[in-house]
Length: 406
Image 1: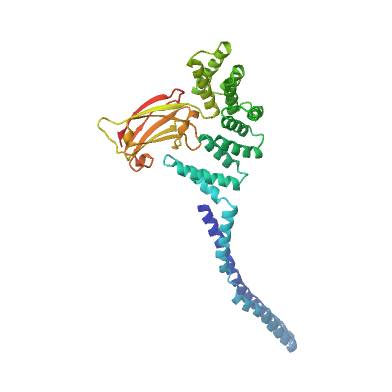
Image 2: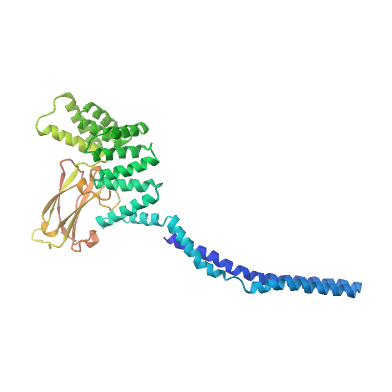
């Protein structure tokens, strides 16, 4: 917004210049009179040599005639149009055009996105997404807005709404591999984890455009596993595994589900809960690779030192942040009352916020804040606790945190 005010100031200064331009006419008039007088004197000297009185009189009349004509202009110059009146009008018109046609709203949205942190409430986040969604309708050519809203809706498990936004993106870029894969993923989840013909076509088209499209590989692998086509699932997951860093947590997880799929392919489905756990594990691993909602999470035990008591009105925030990101924005949050301690909770994709997913993080840092005012943020906390980086897992890694006074 500072740039806007600077532009307005420059426009005002430019307009003010025109206020002084009419004054130059009086200066030009005096210069012309001096030139005419100098010419008359030179002519008078020439005629004095020739001793012709009639020619001297003609020169004097010519001088009077030349001076009489600009005199009218001089009068006009003394009463110029008050151009300064136009200055506030120009500023108002510039501001109106800027807000109508310019990027004032885009600047506001960008600033709001940069300001997101752990103090951002769900209501504030919803209001920001609503304004982005409205702006996306005004600027259909800005695909970033539609994609941002779709990602948020995926995090809120509004898969039908996300699919609608991704389809808007596809209308503008129908061959974009990422948009095709995300739309296929949203359609798969919106239909109750059923891979329809259109979702499969989108995922396969995404791979035809970009053979290394990870979301499409993970989605097709997971969908084929769930419908019992283990050979196809293994094929997609092997391609996905080749894109991972050797020895990384993601690579280890994909290797695990490939091994389970091979077990299913080589023999009868295991009895009891083993087969079910294998299926859930494959879904979660592929869901993480594809960025889909899964059951990956962290189990958190929060306790107080012996003898310590919190007020029932205190708010306990349990937050998870991406350990590999410099952002302070939490990816999952749970709120509890102070009188619920000690407590045991699970952080997973059901607690995700701002369109993010805990299952998509390789490692997270869990922190606990106790706020008497009910506002998140370490500045508002009286008790704090924080874990080392921990990897989300299907069965929920366990981390125990004891609060300490700030």
